[in-house]
Image (cartoon, rainbow, N blue to C red; front, side, top):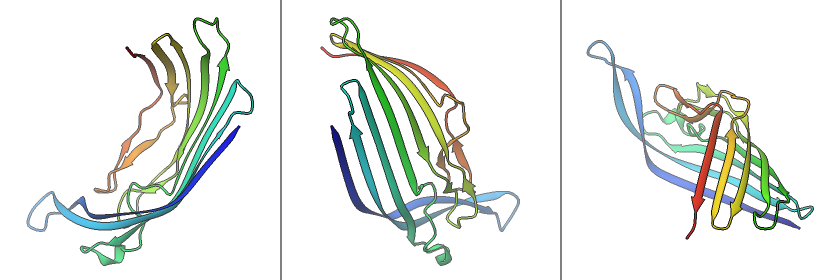
Length: 188
């Protein structure tokens, strides 16, 4: 079975708050200045789910977007620049294999996936790049009656990554390194 969904979109945000650090004109040190701007994101996204056999599940999605500043009163020259911290490409792909278990346990799901967020800018002037990187994850999941447990590792190869470009002074927030987790949920 194959399922494909796709969409074209446009999103607009107005009066977005941005805090910019600038040199203090009256003394030592820097000061923070509040600024507001508008932007528009146009794009296309698609999702694919394939089940080539009763044991394999493939999920993939791709988003291509064009995030552009539409109004920036403090510095009009920034109109048309990319919006800080909004990547132009987001992609994910997961493959899951169902391992047969005794009937009272249900199938054990083994998954391997990759997440990608391409580079983005950390400032409205588009002078500071924040690199993108693919991150690989793996996990196991099983449901026994009404209890589901998940065990996994995110960012298996411990790659440097960033979850958000600050926009203030061109900084960025680092993403987590290799992270193992165990999650148990119950439904009554």
